[in-house]
Image (cartoon, rainbow, N blue to C red; front, side, top):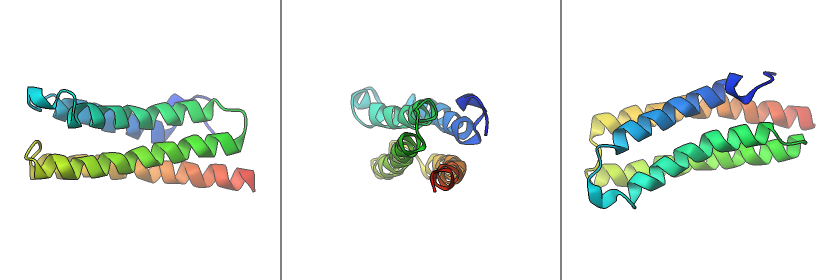
Length: 121
């Protein structure tokens, strides 16, 4: 297991997702400044924050809980991307690309959750 959260593939992929979301939402109109733009950005930051904070916790149970929060934020992003697509804030290409980034972040996160579960057993 990596000693630093920065070494976790789940963290690295979540950072990639967050950067992609920040770049795409920078194109949103000004009236979305307090709407989906900020919601998508906060959810993406929540993923990386929960992975980092979870690794810093003292027990595997606490770590697993924070990883669960990170996973929940990925689902939140997926839901918000559907709304952004339907409102025309992102196009099909951007939607597919961001969904792909979500999946790329979710896979190693699922593996990390399973690892922590097994350590707890």
